[in-house]
Image 1 (cartoon, rainbow, N blue to C red):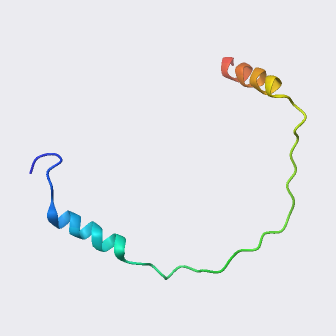
Image 2 (cartoon, rainbow, N blue to C red; image 1 turned 180 degrees about the vertical axis):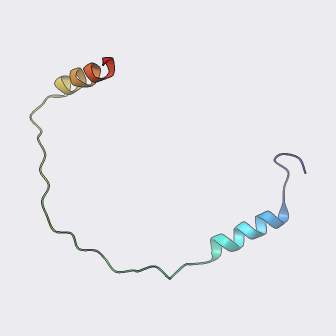
Image 3 (tube, rainbow, N blue to C red; image 1 turned 90 degrees about the vertical axis):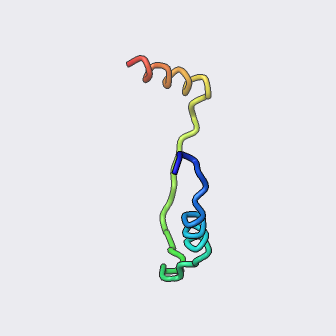
Length: 57
C-alpha cells in the first residue's frame, strides 16, 4: 500500500476508538486553596529590554 492510501480497516478501527467513552476516571472536582501573587510594576518596554538581554546572553 502506498503512502497516503485509504485503509478502510484503519478508518473503522479509529472510528470505533473515538466513539467509545471512558467513564473509568474520577469525576470529582478538586478544591484548591491558596493565594496567587504577581507584580505588575514593570512596563512593557522594560520587559522587552529584559527579554532582549536574556536572549543575548
